[in-house]
Each structure stands twice: as C-alpha cells, then as structure tokens.
Image 1 (tube, one colour):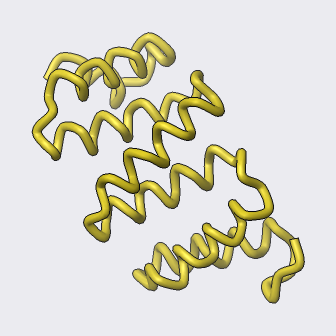
Image 2 (cartoon, rainbow, N blue to C red; image 1 turned 120 degrees about the vertical axis):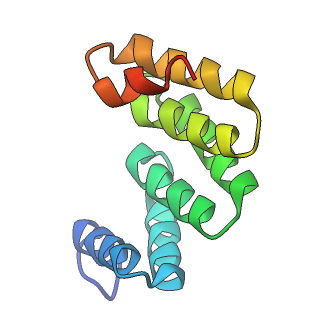
Length: 118
C-alpha cells in the first residue's frame, strides 16, 4: 500500500489512532483505504463496522459484519458485533442467534456468554 502514513501497518495504526481520538472521518478514510488494498482483512472490516455504527449507519455496519462473517465464519467478534447492532435495532431474535453462534465459537469468553440468553 502506498500511503502517506508509510507501511500498511503504520497506516492502519494511524487510522485507529484517529478513531480512538474521535476523528471519525479521518479514521473512516484510513480504514477504507486499507480495505481497498486488503479487502479481505476481517479486523479492519470490524473497525469500520464499529465506526459506521457509532455514526448511526447501522445498515453499513451490518453489511460489513456480514461480509466479515462470509470471509471468516469463525471470527467471533463479527457474530458478537452483529448481535449488538441487531439488538439495538430491536431484532432480538436474530441478535440472539448471533450471540449463540459467538458462544459456540468461543465458549470460555464470559462477555460472549453474557449476551447469549438476552
């Protein structure tokens, strides 16, 4: 990735720092640039989905999370985060299914287990 921020790892770190500092537009741009170069990066899909949800774009967040699940069905955070978005939208039944899937994938994670039976 040819980035003004250096290596892909440095560019991602800069985008994440923007996200943590609340500079969401800069973070979003950085995540999108990274995904343009590495479209299958599930972790960056997660970060962009979280950011999208934070700014009220839950449809975009759900699409990114579903894309992440398609790329790596065993990535627990995708299921758990999709559950959170769905629960906040009022789709409790589907959210519970997401939480149950996360619980199956990572049965020893107390955070995942706590959502399983909402």
